[in-house]
Structure formats: C-alpha cells, structure tokens
Image (cartoon, rainbow, N blue to C red):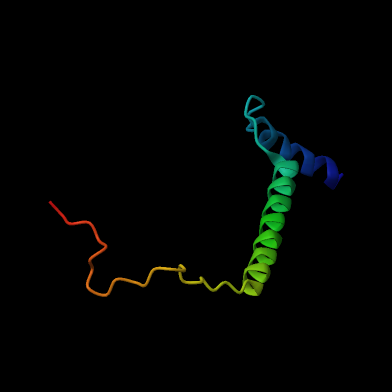
Length: 76
C-alpha cells in the first residue's frame, strides 16, 4: 500500500521532466572524469621528465660577448 502511495506522489514530479532536453548524463561525466585523470597523469609524467633535463647552453665559439654593446643595432 505504501509503495503505491509513494508512486502517486512521484508521478507529478515525473511530468516536470522535459523530454526534449538533452543532458550529458552519467556517461558524459565518466568520459570527462577519465579525460581529467589522463591529463593529470600526463602532467605528472611531464613534470618528472622535465626534472631530469640538464641543459647548459655552450657559448658560441670564435666570438666573445660584446661588453660595450658594439654588436647591437642602433635605434632610430
């Protein structure tokens, strides 16, 4: 008896749902969450790989850096 009473109270609520409205639903949330976790893992991996990089630029051979600015173009 109480189940049928509960259903009679829920029927007006079911009529309020718009059948023409499209929502992503649970599948959309699962796909979005999977993409977010994938991006997080990629960023974590990239951070680990960038920490291993040891880059030191070698000076150009044959030319010394200009201390007085002679090699710079003049502004007009």
